[in-house]
Length: 147
Image (cartoon, rainbow, N blue to C red):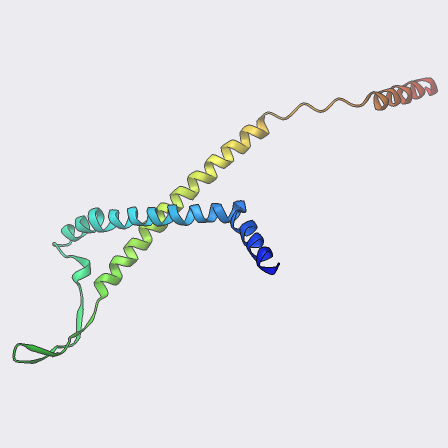
């Protein structure tokens, strides 16, 4: 009995609108991230590298410890501080953050425009019920008779 409850609870959770929306967002976000990574790696960074003298940022590094060799055999690998890759990832982050900012700004602007359209055309007030109208007429007549 508990097993059926578990699966029915899980099914209810997994099919809720928010969970499905979040899953779609994660998938679209992953695809968007790949597009932006390609934009940065394949278009922007080669142009930046060309502007600063043909440097590929991912190749920039500092040797912390040289490799230990015994003839042609490597006994101990060299240790590098790959700061160029770090610079590359910072640029990736900034471009992704900027693109997400533009998307969110567009969504907010579109949402505000839609909200203004709804506010610009207010709905006509609902007519008052007949008994309320009758009572108001009686009130107005009584006021006029007093004066």
